[in-house]
Image (cartoon, rainbow, N blue to C red):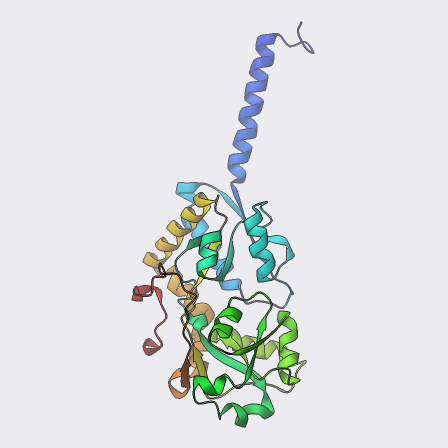
Length: 298
């Protein structure tokens, strides 16, 4: 019997075209890409990574279609967003993190160091009255006598501990007050992080200072990671980033966010303490010089 005045043939056609319209609507909306939202409004540490993501997605729109890029509904620390990614419920669909053997088993890594490995060059935030004490650190054995602050869930914690260093962990925004309060001696930060963080947090922590003479270095690739079942998104982002490397936009973003900090860091006048990173998977592309920051070129 006809429904609402429609013949069976007309009803079938209406259902077909309705389904087609829904399909076109889904296609026009494109893939939704969700990255971890910052924990605080003042946290700008990952703006460059969001820009890399957006640029890579734009560069692949012709091949892979439309996209929507958005932060997660709430802020997450690293432990939380890795857990959410592994669950695969799309609270996040791409995250950023240092790599390790365990992470590359649990997730799909995109093995292009997002900041050319610059996060492995560390300048410490300290209490301003501790500079003379830090100047006594000349070797790794000297460094082992001091304590280091790190964020909860950060991959660096295992690296420092594997090298015999004492580490205290806390929420990121508490670490600045803790180092000035003497809870630990050094808060090592990436070159691209330390100056902005000092400008931001020294207002509330007037005893905060940037250490003047020491540079801690360890190989520290920072990758995009994806859920094991999301190879399509991983492949799309990789295609986009490799296009960016060819057209210069990847280097342009690197210089935009890191160039001024590299100059301020004055690397050639700092004494270097190198730390082994035995957490790196054998697949880490350490021999591809095009992927890594070279301080000799700056």
